[in-house]
Image (cartoon, rainbow, N blue to C red):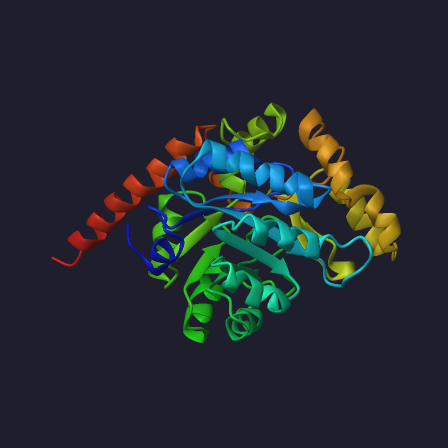
Length: 322
């Protein structure tokens, strides 16, 4: 398959694995890259620059294909913000691709370009996509209301956001949110995207580090089993509908502070629950497309089914024109 995204990133298929904190480790990312997509490791999983460098080198030992590093940039710079150190790591290691989200990556763009690193900035709204193009991003990922993680505050779906973004920028667009099978893959391409990013579907794979309890829950889950939390702090997040999420909503309704909310929504709480299999003990990012996950499969099979399924769909559509 050839699109501007495959050409830009040097990958076989325009399929990108979403950067998921705690789960997107070297072995997982390498499996995606080896299967023809773009695997991504997540910087925020690592407490120091040195730890991230070690993980980058581990990916390189497992694949000779392109891969990326996700750097989720906090809205405001503070003493605990490791963004600068993470960028130092990827630039020194000359990582092929960097995916950023959060605040604008503008200050780092010249350094990335000098190192020959491709930059994809992930956003939840058209206005941010336009800003990403202006500051020099090589491509932009647009995520709709369906997506797991952070869909923004506008509640606009992928079906609408994708063509709106394509109409508003000239750089390649990657679509995310609600995509879990070949039908969603082809739909995104039909809407003008030149690639897709998937997170939720890749969680339910044999290579995923998520606890078996979570994977089995996903297979049984419906599209209505997620909920949006954190609106009160303007950091909306789509997560599994569980006891922890319901508690967050109760706290937000009574005006809880960020410090209070962090006792439930912090990454460390979620990490324990994620790996210990306690599906009620923390919040887990999860997209509505969990309702389309019917089986736990190897990463390679997921990608092969996307591609072969896309070929069948395109042939069927072509037949309609006869």
